[in-house]
Image (cartoon, rainbow, N blue to C red; front, side, top):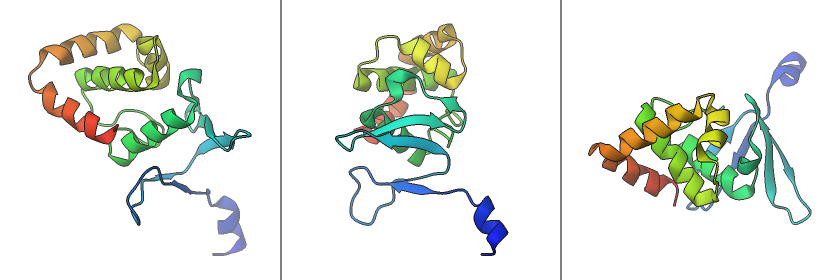
Length: 143
């Protein structure tokens, strides 16, 4: 690698959260983090802008990385190939695990969607029988 390539190269970090030995969990190109005095990781910023405060903790970082690793979120934490119903179910599942009360506002901000659209998608997803398979997949990824 020549000097110009070294200057243009973006750093990559590999985070391994509760993975089996030798299993790679995620490659993240652009994510600013800091470690507090107890060495707990705090995600500060992603390529797309600031994360909502409710998603800046270590537990949230692990869940977001798990979702990205499993192809549900892209590198910029945006849903990839999911229907509105699935995005609503995803927001609700994350909110339950992280204790987020303003579900639709927090994830509407992160995913650049109107909160009403997320809530409507969630309601639709809860009515659809085919959503059960997606919910099972979410439970496996987020455990």
